[in-house]
Length: 141
Ligand SMILES: [Zn+2]
Image (cartoon, rainbow, N blue to C red; front, side):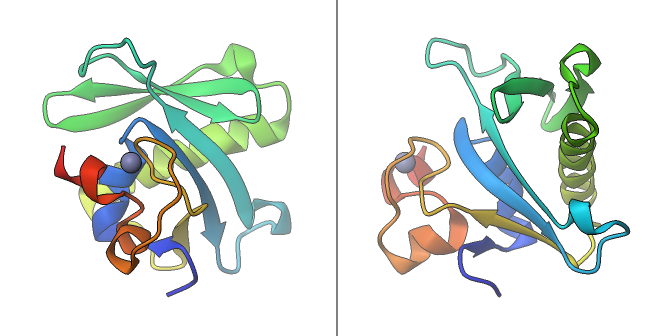
């Protein structure tokens, strides 16, 4: 495991926790520019639990994550795809979230947090929190 890497079995809970920033790192990608993409998935503080989450690439909202039953579906926002990188970022999130739910995300795809809790943004300190990307209080929710 890489530093700050989250196991695939724990990654989805982190990604939809409401205030996460993460890196999708791919070993030997088809194109070198695809090896490393940093994104955030956030929920507005005042939103309801079933409201969609927003997927950000830099300052641009490139997709949203809708909650359908027990699952998650990524909807693209192509008007905000200013460059190829924006499109690739949105498509990467769609792929990762879909494959995590199917439990078929390839092992060469790694999800890394940035040292901050995916739900509240506080710095993660203890080993268990660093392992799953969520602090003890947020994990209990
Ligand atoms: Zn937290």
